[in-house]
Amino acid sequence: MFDIRPFTDSDRHGLRNIYLAARLQALPWVSRTDLNEEDFDKDTQDEDLLVATINTLPVGFIALNPSGDVIHHLYVDPDSSGRGVGSALLNASLERLGRPAHLKCLIDNQRAVEFYRQRGWAITGEGEDRHGRYYTMALKEH
Image (cartoon, rainbow, N blue to C red; front, side):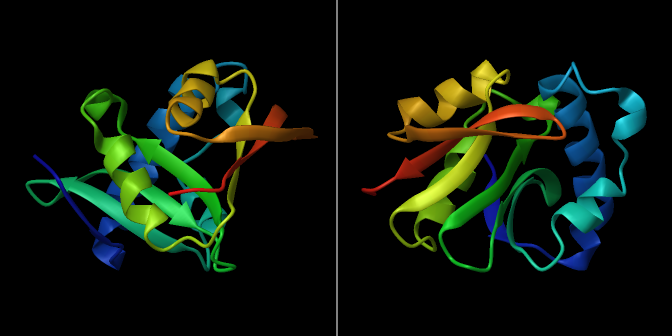
């Protein structure tokens, strides 16, 4: 089983690796040269992070925007995928999020889109960033 706890600096190295590995798997259309381990530091700066661990080793994380109602990142180590880590991180974050809660999910990442839709998130709009087109999604009820 796994535990969920707040981020500590000792998690940084493991989460950098997870962030890179999970994005390489989830975003195959993005060039490998556009992704690196250090992206984790800048992409999660000033965010509230929860970390899932198995035997004290990080296996996933969720990053919440300080505004209190936005999920900015949810990534699970590909080797731990399908074990409930993402669901547990999402559920733990819902206790901290205001309503309606919001997130962006790349349209081409259909696995993630379905993950959120199965958990009650609704598509509310579309946009585009450097990685492609995305849905904006919202959750009104817990």
